[in-house]
Image (cartoon, rainbow over all chains, first blue to last red; front, side):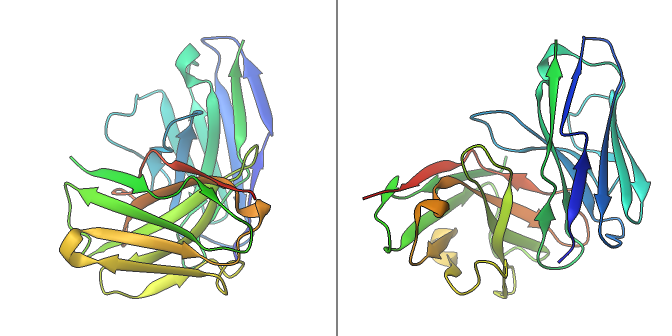
Length: 107
Length: 120
């Protein structure tokens, strides 16, 4: 099983700041790495697929990068509505796994 | 537009079987190149992948749940289902059904979820 580790656990910034979230895999996930935004009472929302592609309707301030085992989600200028938990998710074979999540707080 | 709706009992007794159905509209669960699956989120915890059923009918399960989980489908109703046997309080969670696309994660999408509580 591929284990995904995310850091930091929590991130707190004022609006307009840049946020960098990290996801590390215990072995290569090739390009099958996605980032989800999850707010209470809502479905997980696909932000980034295949490492670096923005999903439909996702603002340009969200950028995914990385390769192999190390991946990054960057939010270039935080907005109040970006407050959520962010998960990385791999689908490079079974079982699929999610990272433990990074909580982003906008203060 | 793809819509996924989870349905089933919101309360299940310990040792009994949790049964949920996902009704799909806006796509066909038999469409080549897609998988249909379940994830869950226990209270205060992160997301956990449960398993999926492919367009071919093949199933894939989380090894930690494999002995208790079955995912099946009803093509005539465009529905797929989750059964989890011998539940305990640890199975209390929001359960989400969703679609995953083969060879790319572009088409991945999850429903709004349904809370299932395991309690006597």
